Length: 445
Ligand code: 2IT
Image (cartoon, rainbow, N blue to C red; front, side, top):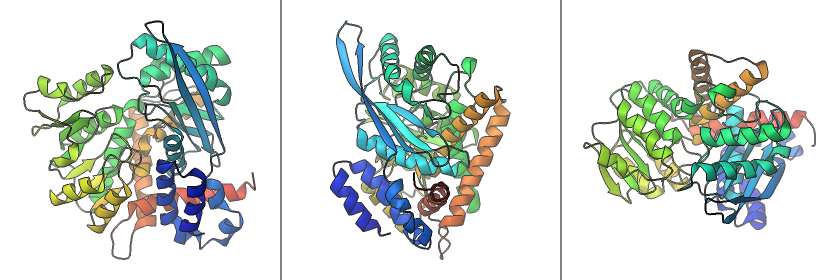
C-alpha cells in the first residue's frame, strides 16, 4: 500500500471529513512499512476495507423541550469494524458532532479496542444535541427519543454503546431504561450503567485511572516515578476527574484543569475536596470551570487560556480532539514538559505530535492511553454475560494488567533503533495487525 495514494482517493470521496482523514492518515503512515511486509494483506485489500465503516445509521431525533417547543436533532451510529467482536464504542452528545467526527472516533476505536486484548470491534455514535443548560427532564426526553430510533440496531452481541463527551451515568440510565422497555430484555446492551442495574465498579474512574497507570509504565521504563511531578490536565469531565484522582493518590501535583471558558492554575495541586468539586461543576451542566477559582483561594482562573500555558512536567490532554496544537506543544517543550500522554481521542494535532517526537519527549497516543475506559466496559460486558459482579479490587487489578499489556505492546512495536519509543507507531501497529489478521481469516465479507 501507499498511504498517499489511499489518502488521495479518500480525500476525493470524503474531502470535507477533516477529522476522519486525519485519523486515517496517522494510522496508515505508521503501519505502512509493516503492512507492506505482508503481501497477503495487500492481496485481501485489508487497508481499503478497514478504512470504510461497515455501515452508518443516521436518524432524526424529535423531542419536546420544557417550554413545549419541538426540537429536532440528528442521531448517528457508525458501525465501523466487527472483525474481533461486536461493535463497541461510546455515544457523544455535543453540538460539534457530525459524520467526520464520529468516523474518526469509530476508526480510532477499532485499534484501541484491539489493544485491550478483549473481543470488541469498533463503533461510535452520538448526536449534535447540546446538553449545556438543559434540564434533567429535557435530557431524559432526548435520551428516550434517541433510543427509540437506535434500539433496533444494537444488542449485547451486536453493538454495545457507552458514554463519551456529554453522555455519563445519568444519560446511560435513561437510554438503558428506554432500550429495555422496547426490547423487553435486560441485557448488557450498554456499558457505563449504574451499579444497581448491571454496571461495573470502577467503570466511571477507569479511563482516567488507566491513563495514569499507563503514564506510570512510561515513566518507570525511564527510571522515573509520578510522585511529586507537576501534572497539567485539560478538561474537567469524567476523564479529567479520574486522572486527577489517581495522579493525586500517587503523589503527583495536579496543578491545572481547564474548560471551554479558560484554565485554572492551582499551585497547591488537587485534594479530595477539589476533585469532588470537579464532579459538582460537571453535574451543573454549565460547561464552565471558572467557579473553581471562586471556591478555592489557591486557584486562579485565566479566562480564554488553555492548560498548556502553565509550566508542568507531564501534560495530559483530557478534553477534546485537536485541543493541543503545534504551538501549544512548542510552549510546553519550552517550559520543560518532558512527557505528554494524550487521554482525549486524537487530543494532539499532527504538528503537536511531530514537535514532541522531534524533541524526543515521551509521547503516547489516546488510543493506548485512554483504552482503560473501553477495557473496563469490556469487563462490564463479561460480568453481565456471566450474571455476576466483581469487586472493585478485581476490576482494578484487571485494568492494571490490561494497561501493562498495552504499554508492553507499544514498546514492542514502537521502539526505534536509537531507543526512543514511538508509542504512536507501537499502538497502531499492534492494534492494526490483530484486526487485519482477524479480517484475513474471516474471508471477504
Ligand atoms: O472513547 C472511548 O473509548 C469511550 N468513549 C468509551 C467507549 C466504551 O465503549 O466504553
